[in-house]
Length: 306
Image (cartoon, rainbow, N blue to C red):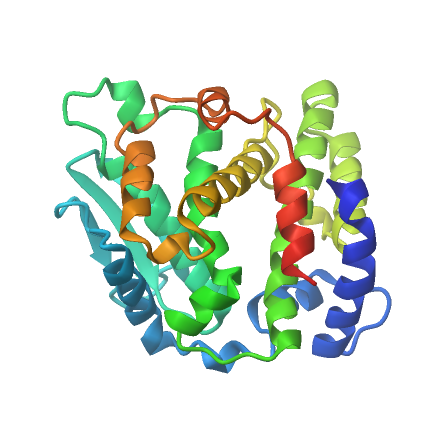
């Protein structure tokens, strides 16, 4: 994935980074975060409209975002509450917490949608499902449930119809490049996690992660974060993103480009979520009749940035 998106990240990514932050070379991590979280079009996605955007979309799809009352939304603004959205199984499938602290910008929309996808996965299995289906399962499937809906925040039609945002093509590319950067960071983390498995969570793994992060983003990763988020026993995020891209391709083939507002697509999504953690990634790839791989993800990333 890094090889196949290098040119895109260096050309379009470098130009957008300079345009939004004024940095040409030697970007720091905070410059990258500024591009991801605060692009120039952020004001088109005010805090007060994020929940309305999701509810507007759910009405089109006829999706019960509360999953029969199992998903409990916590939108209170409390001290020390972490910004963004997070879904956690409290007593699945009867109670799943969805904590949300509104922020401004398209990335906040994507994170709310992503957390909603995880909440649906945790809340919809039958109550008599075995504990491993309710609490565990394939970790790649959790990442796929997040990425499947989070990717809607980079769909220009979705943003126009649901978020009511009118964006220029350059603004759309600034949103799209965030998906490229996220995927490249996931790829770098997966390679660094493999290094950590072989070398241990020490200085050599940290150096490898910092080098890979710089290649993926063009920015430096602080030494204190070099071992953060590494999983020596396997990183599932990239596998989940690849699976989500293939699921979106499958849904587009069956329900057209605007599958996200076709009520018939809700049945296909429910078929995925209702099984909780029982199917693994290999099962879902086989059901879609496609070999597991990153081709769909790479194609989607390249297409979104044109």
